[in-house]
Image (tube, rainbow, N blue to C red):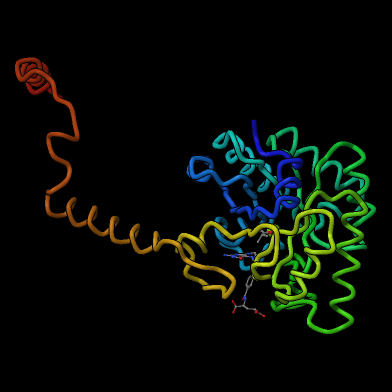
Length: 281
Ligand SMILES: Nc1nc(=O)c2c([nH]1)NC[C@@H]1CN(c3ccc(C(=O)N[C@@H](CCC(=O)O)C(=O)O)cc3)CN21
Ligand SMILES: CC(C)C(=O)C(=O)O
Ligand SMILES: [Mg+2]
């Protein structure tokens, strides 16, 4: 049985912190599931770390369905949440179509969308149809061209707005809310006042859970080292060293060896060669 929205609600009530990590493919999902991570996010950050775009704006619902299906196939215990990409929830009907694809074609258990009170009616519509919805406030990367890349909600007005947005999402039925690049004390205050769990990224330890991008945690993304991330491994360096060793051994003749292949009987090869070498070509 996968993690349910009830499970994470209980974790909030008991004060148990929980981890979420992004995953974009089958092998990664298997590793995260085996590590006991209860929540996997097929983030539209895949546009940057998997597809090489400079923002999440170009990501399509087809991209999301393709990757989400792989993550669902690779996991058994985690709840898989899929991001609704930019403009796929521009109105409620589009949101239903996009969520339907993620839930029915890819098999995710929940969707996430960015925005506050303005998207609450869309959240309500999805929730009324039986779709678990996660909110996402603070720095909302799909609006990067509008808001820039920075901590959100520092002013009195912006902090009030964030509180109101979080409440609007919870009232609309969102089962959890991501707080991205929100001042730590504000994130803590929102977490204390909100009935549903908050999941922080760059929002401090006062949130109920934390979410991080796979590549940032594992040292696989060298285009930026976001302040909100901690590297638990340097896989990029390990991979590069392994690939160098492989190429060196191929050049030197150290790889492959007899152990890496199978062979046939010498007499059978001789018979085959006698036939072909003897034939006039
Ligand atoms: N690899 C990766 N990690 C992420 O966390 C991430 C993505 N990609 N793509 C989608 C969004 C974009 N995100 C980002 C991208 C950049 C910064 C950044 O440049 N942060 C500044 C600090 C900004 C501030 O504190 O005001 C930094 O210096 O790290 C933050 C979040 C978060 N998400
Ligand atoms: C950074 C997280 C919250 C996200 O939305 C993503 O990976 O797309
Ligand atoms: Mg996202």
